[in-house]
Image (cartoon, rainbow, N blue to C red; front, side):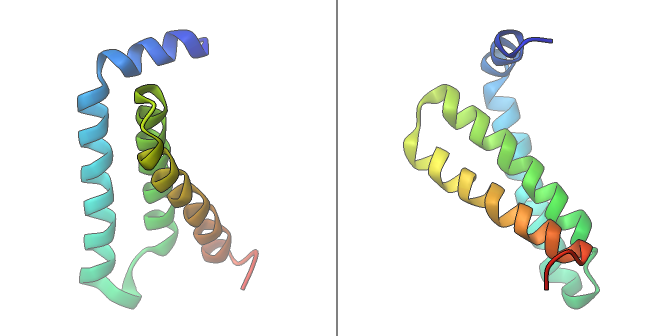
Length: 90
């Protein structure tokens, strides 16, 4: 599946993809808020990074620089969180 085909798919379903991404983010932060230190941190970081990728892609297609910046930042934070949760960095 080429990038052009995937971009076309995302553009056709952009509102739904954005809503799913936002709901994923709300769910992951709610999980941490409810469970605190008992949270499944690796799951939360992976889940949060996936939603950041989805939202960044949508923002790129819409050429929305503010949301590209915000969600690209969350991708970086998520990757650091994944490395920390996996024990690669302290």
